[in-house]
Amino acid sequence: MTIIEIPAGWPADESAARAVQQELRGRLVRDEEGPAAGEGHVTGLDVAYDDERDLVAAAAVVLDARTHQVVEEATAVGRVSFPYVPGLLAFREIPTVLAALDRLSADPGLLVCDGYGLAHPRRFGLASHLGVLTGRPSIGVAKNPFTFTYDQPGTARGEFAPLLADGEEVGRALRTQAGVKPVFVSVGHRVSLANACAHTLHLTPRFRQPETTRLADSLCRRALKEALGEE
Image (cartoon, rainbow, N blue to C red; front, side, top):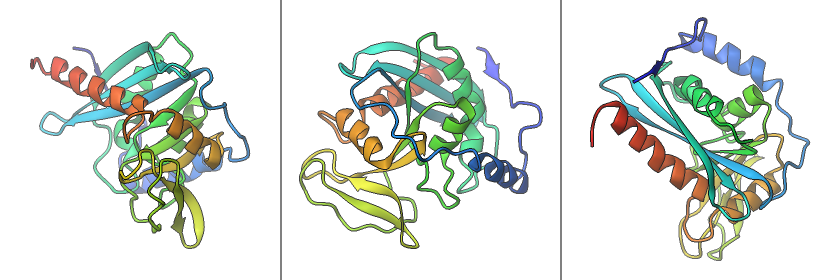
């Protein structure tokens, strides 16, 4: 089992991580529409942890955006690279996620993260962080709304309500299936919020979560079990 080690110079404390976060946030691109939903490739990214062994497994699953067929998938297992600090979770897993992305030969296209982008206390969650580091368009689709306020959207598929932070719309609570609780969509990098929601709806034909997230979640869990020698 090859373990991705923590990169030299990686932030080791909250102060250093916040400084990196602040510097990278200045590179965010928020005025691009991004690729059209249903065109090109989309790549789901997710991680699974083994806290006892201080390991994280990352998965990257590339789908044909139109058909949702798997084009390619890759995994990596690495050391957890940062302590648990709310608002700085990206620093725990980014080296391993980047290693998984680097193992792909196909163009990843749009990156779809199981987490947040601008819907973050400092407007720079995992989706934004990865988007800036890779230069690729990215979105965050989270299961929970973090600390932000919102009204319940209508019950029909496609209904949404703004996710608000001090009156600013930082994302949307989006109903991907009728009568099912919403997901929380935010811009990562180089994509508009409306387009991020369009991608999310296109990726959720049957279930609440995007197909990208469902496949990446399953793959990273399998990769962690294999790395630990479990069935």
